[in-house]
Each structure stands twice: as structure tokens, then as C-alpha cells.
Image 1: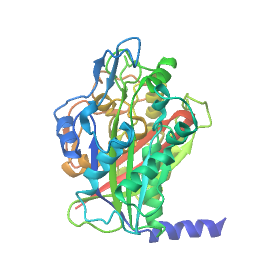
Image 2: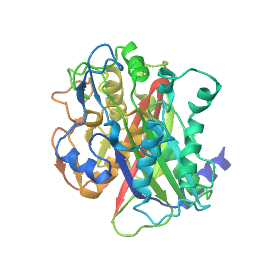
Image 3: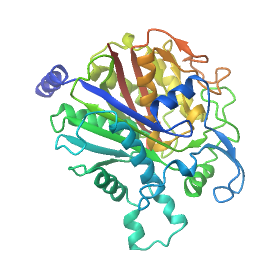
Length: 389
């Protein structure tokens, strides 16, 4: 045991810094990260009331992207085109060699092409096309990535797990650069699943609010490029991350928050910081009764209840496999611009334990952010980002 502890200590001391060198978001708010962040600061939400009988027999609130965001390549599904559009925008802003042997592609999604079941016969060809590995290889081939892509599909923490995986691969010396992209689209298949849980709100969601009713779904994509190469100037580092599991219930989260706290503590330890260094928290904040309560308890267990906290689900809805990536990009831009967004939809406290909900756009010395996520099966993830000047 002492030998293992010694090896871990050496790892923490010797690991190389990982930099976020480029980013993108494709959503109803825009097709670049800059466009999205501008709209967020203006308080604009992508959530609308939709009347789509082919999605739902009743109207529903969701954040959906116009179908004309991209028509190329025509051989790809809408899900795959979302990934390609996001990756193209992100890598165009960096000199990193996409086709180099030092670069790995990691894809995050929860549903992928599952909606093809709604329109096509479930034959062997369709079964292959629905696999996430099929889509990942297709996207990798479009860009010319050399290595076989890695797929992460771990419920709603998929995006954060993909980032943590990339960070550790880079620090282990396997690669020098990583392109991490995530996407999900909303269709009748996806929406009906959440409706069957009675988890979908009949109004715009209200994270952490006393009157919260549940989630709104959203679709989107996001990409971040991670690198061991210091981009110089103002930059954001991924300092550490950790993953845990409640072992509580297939859909209901822990009632104590202890397991999310375990992930938070692990991320803080790997980052090599003190919890007092954390300036802001980007919560998962789905606006369901149990998730927000559990997160509030975990934040209190971590002693971070007086740190500004927000959820941005009121702008994007829950974007599933893209959520962790979209919210990480927003957190990184917040650190760079020294602003912290309000929690759209929040009005009055709705958790039994206090958390410092951001209800207005704040400006201040925000340098270090804790990003957390939780998902079905009791999975949790935490990530530490820090702005370096």
C-alpha cells in the first residue's frame, strides 16, 4: 500500500500541465463558442415551447437546433454532422496537427444514432450504423485521424469523463494532443424515455428553485482541444478530475451527496489545490427534485456552500452527452472573461442545504472553477479548471 501511495505521489508531482487550446459550441444560440457566450451574457435561452407531433403527442419545452445548421456531408446522419461541424470549428482555430500521430480523438454521446430506429428497419446494417463506434470511426475518417477514436458513453457524465480520459492519456505520454467532442440530438425516442419518468417539466426549467418541476431536453455539440503544448498568454488548464458512483439506484441519485463529494475531493486532490482556491462551481443542476438536492448536500460536504454556484441548464436544457463539454467550455470562457453567469429560471432557494446560487451576472476575480456532473446509475464526475495568465 505504501508503494502505491508513493507512486501516486510521484504522479501528482511529475504530471505535465494540460491546456485547453481551442473550443467550440454548436447550439440554438450559435455555431461558435464566442457566439454562444455572448448570447449567454445577454441572458438568451434556447429553450422554446415546441409542438411537434412526430416528437410528442403534447407540446414540450426543449432547446432544439434548426435542421439547416449543416447539410454536409450528406452521407452522415444529423448526429454525425453535429460532431463534424463542432470539430471543424474548433480545430480551425489551432495549429495542432489533426492527422498527426500525437493526436487522439475522443467522442462523447449517450444516444448517438439511436433515433434511426424510428424511421428504418432494424436489420443488421442498421444495428451497425447505430453503434457509437461506427459514428466515431466515420467522423475520424472525415478528418483523417490516424488512431482509432475512443468512445465514452457514461450517461450524463460522459462529457466530463471524456475530458478526464483525455487529460490522463496526455499526462501518461500516450499522446500530445486530444480532440474531445460530444453531441446528442433529441427525437421522439429520446424524449419519450424521459417523459416516461415524469421528469420533463411543462415549463422552462428552474434549477435549484423551490418550484422546480424537472428537466428540459436540449441538443447540441461541443469540442475542446487539449494539449501539452503551452499556448502562451491567457489560457485555461485542466488540473484534475475524478469519478465516483452512488451504487444507489438505476435512476435516483444518492440521498446524501457523499459519493459526488468523493469525486469532488478526488478532483481537488489531483489538481493539487486547496478547496479554498475554488472561486466558482458549475453544477449539473438538472432542475429535478432529487438531483439538485443531492448536489447541494455534496457541495456542503465539501465545505463549498459559500462559493458562487450556477447551473446553465436554463439556457441549453439538458444536452446529455454534450452537457459536460458545453458546460466546461462555458466555464473556461467565464474564467477568461472574469464573469459568472446567473442561473436562469432560479428565483428562490429550493434545497434543504444552502448553496450560493448565482442569480445575476457577476464580475470578479474568478480563476478556478469546479465543474461537476451526475447521471443515471448513480455516476458522478468532477473537474477542476484554472485560468493562467
